[in-house]
Image 1 (cartoon, rainbow, N blue to C red):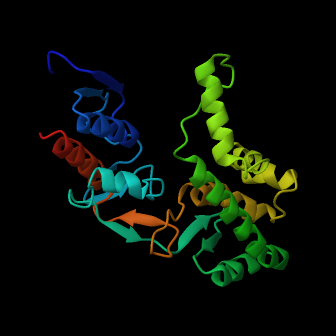
Image 2 (spheres, rainbow, N blue to C red):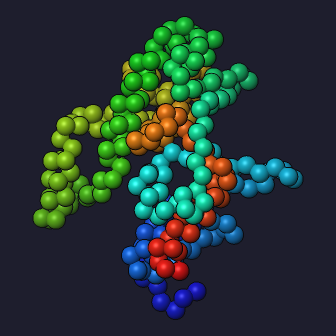
Image 3 (cartoon, rainbow, N blue to C red):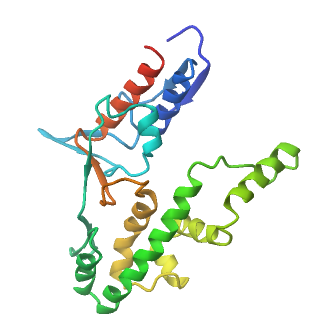
Length: 246
């Protein structure tokens, strides 16, 4: 442990690693403290049975923004991103629904349970995409304290409103989709999907709002990593050390 550090980061998850990497690139000396023997937090790949390794929690890469990838030069440090098109969502009764980049193929999967769900899915898809665009716009906004009464907070709030005034009341839709389950959204009238589909869509909503395109050339909405989640953590660590000259 160094004698002097400029910042202490509690938790060596991928967010903590990114934070430490940016601080190191600015010439500071961050110290990351992690309880476990591996870093990455929820984004780790571990042996689940002799000879078999899998990502034990986070199973897709979504919100690693291209700006972060470029800033830390993650590709040069080993990050290899792969498209992941079809997603299987298991249901309670042993059945499943397959989600795909092709709306038509997803509709066909829905139609196995309910024709009405299949017909409404394109509308639902547009609804999610529109909210994903709003979410992407807000990703790089620094939150301000809504209870603050000082001049600095006022300027921050005024700047936020000026940059995003076109969003208006749509921001509440984003808040609902980040805080409510698919079932609750359905009861509120936002969605009109069948019971089984809503259960599968619990994961789908989180993915679609977090796995946004970010201007990628790849049409695929979901992405995986060739080296597993550990490859992500190693590339972030390498990018931070390289930026710090270490």
